[in-house]
Length: 464
RNA sequence: GGUGCGGUGGCAGAACGGUUAUGCGUGAGCCUGCAAAGCUUAUACAAAGGGGUUCGACUCCCUUCCUCACCUCCA
Image 1 (cartoon, chains in turn orange, brown):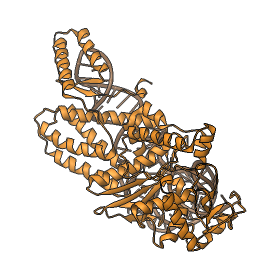
Image 2 (cartoon, rainbow, N blue to C red):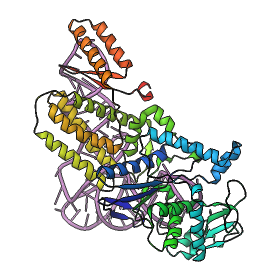
Image 3 (cartoon, rainbow, N blue to C red):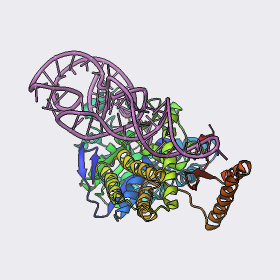
Image 4 (cartoon, rainbow, N blue to C red):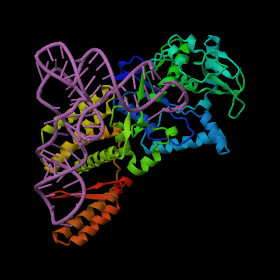
């Protein structure tokens, strides 16, 4: 598999026959997550699901930043503790992302639970003279790390001349960043240097190395983390281990709205709860995967609607497949499956192009719907198609809700009744049955000779 | 100002030095008791501007312009 690596700015081969270790920078838990967070996490979720579908073991670690100024501020505002705030939003995170059908990570380490690791990390950096203690805390000496700027392609002197960097007198160099901040505001921990809490970047270095080793495969996050977060992580980690840190750096583009980055400070966010309520998980996932992961994607009702249309077509495809009963084996089916399956895999293997993969998936959908319309969908062929179709659904994290056997029985009975009424031209009564099924979220599709049903989840967007 | 992605039809988004995907949308038709959905078909003188290179460029080179992101917390 090839992936574009931010560090080398080139495509790197990833050997997926071995175990893959992935660290994804998660969220700071001080507020609700929005669709920008969702995109990054869904991209990595699909990456992981694809690898696992190929039999690759994936160690997938995603942190929660649960000590941070924003959390503390929020706690003050609500007159509660930082711990209360972070645990509330961790819960909120799981509600959102379970709702988006994101598979739980192997591990969700929290900064507050790794203070020892962090302290040891800092201790060693001080021993190596890569860090120093000052009035306000412990700082990393950027000028001592010769490759600083290699990830973000920034030059140290240019950064220093940047007028927007706030100069802190306690720092030897304005670029130095905090490993440990002295503070006696809760939460704080004792340390060899004084009471305080960890800086932001150090937790990811300490925890990724702790769980994945000193040199793991993929480190990822949103593009906005390249500088300074990931740059700093490289500096501290490589100073610590004297080895190359992550092999591949994978960065996901921003979700924009009207062309502008979606962010709290701009106040233009769409929360996951909001989009989930209005569009449902499948449509959001399709939306998040509809462009190449590295590029920005613009949130718009139009695009969401387009993905809703495509999802409806996919659902119909599925129901056509399970209802197939024609006996017209088509020798082209084998070829069709091979072709779409290869296109799907090839797209993902060449820098994880989910847009192209989706194209292959929809090609299969179109073809099945065509065959069904032409009454050429053989039931045995359908079985073969279903297994490939379901494999793609699984990788993409899309879910078609299942129904129970009893429900199916009931639906079949109602349809039979309706057919009889239609034959007798008692259309009003027949329509009543159709309405009743509709209330059960069952939609009928009348083909020339037969009627099939599909389960159709109602979402708010349908009624808008 | 620096750095980095980009700029392709109404929208989304590919490949490719020569024949311009694909999807959504839109028009027409088929099917239907009606409806929904589906299917069929049509549709677009698309390549930011200007120079080159070439027999030929959307694709290569130069240049100008523009968007966005990062340079401060951020997925």
